[in-house]
Every structure is written in structure tokens, then in C-alpha cells.
Image (cartoon, rainbow, N blue to C red; front, top):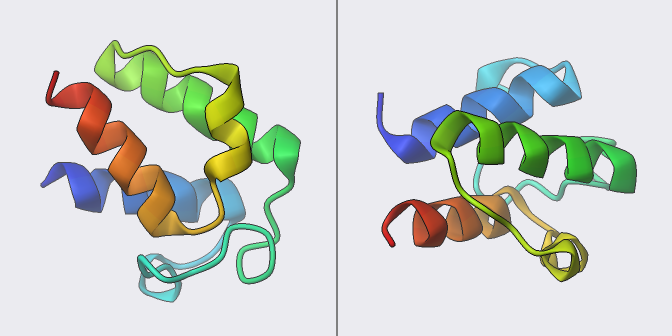
Length: 78
């Protein structure tokens, strides 16, 4: 499974929706009903899973699934 697919799978699980309901354009709050605490938990899961570090300020930039994918991919590729 590619990193992008793994990120989408984790987000789908967190949101309690089917995998095919999550696309890169899905909005975390409006489409998937994830609040700021959910976003923090998502970032913590990715930190643990991929041994990366994220900044607290990055949470504010997470609007879509694509935003999460971009942050995780950037951190993993370092």
C-alpha cells in the first residue's frame, strides 16, 4: 500500500466512513465531520506510525485530506 493510500485509510477509519468516501478533496471538517481534536489525534497517529514530528501550527493548515497527505509525505521523505 502506498503512503497516500495508507493516509486515506487512517483518515477513513478515524472518520468512521468507508474508504471510498474519502478522496484527496474531502474536507476534514465539512465532509468527514472531524474536529480539531480529531485532527490532533490524526497527526499523533502519523507521528507514531511513520516516526515523524509535526508542529502544533500545522494543525491549522489541515483543511482537506490532500493537506494531510502533503504534510505526511513531506515529513516522511526527509
